[in-house]
Amino acid sequence: MLIRTTHTPRWARALMLLIPPIWLGLIIGISFIEAPLKFTAPGITIPLGLGIGRRVFLAMNITEVLLGILLLIALISMWRDHRHQELPNFHKMQLYSFVALALLLIKTAVIRPLLAAHTDRVLAGTFEGGSTAHYYYIGVEAVLVIVLLLLMVAVVRGLLPPSPSSDDVSL
Image 1 (spheres, helix red, strand yellow):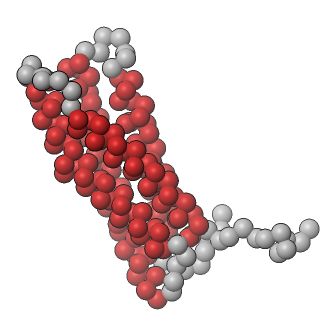
Image 2 (tube, one colour; image 1 turned 45 degrees about the horizontal axis):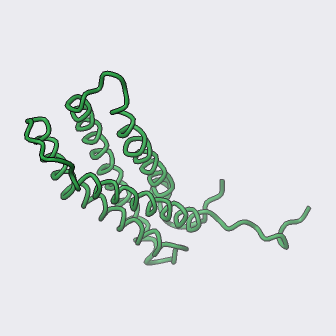
Image 3 (tube, rainbow, N blue to C red; image 1 turned 135 degrees about the vertical axis):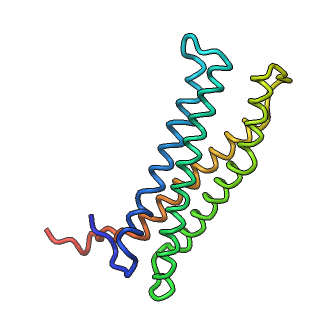
């Protein structure tokens, strides 16, 4: 696979190519597959499912924060190069990266504490009904999936050379 020639370090380009699909796979696997299926397994009670969910989502959140930090480091490295030599699609990469990081911050600093408080009430037996925080979390995750897909497209278009046109190909 050819990559456009830039002064950006290979590790930064590699991180920009790898982090979005890894992050996307994490969200799909945990939030959209594991979490709903967990409560359908035989013998899983609400308290047991919530306990498992807390651990799984804590691990996921830590992983997402690490991925976000690596994405930011790669983006800063690419920005340094972009100041000297324009990188194709860099502004879109920058925009989608910052939106993804902002969504991660909202999930981590706002929504997860609300979910933890709700889970505490359920486990303590003072459950008062459904939690809108779950809907906020699902909404943020859905938007994050779209943003990560857009970021993947922007990165591929920015870092990989364009396909040769049919006029340039000789058989």
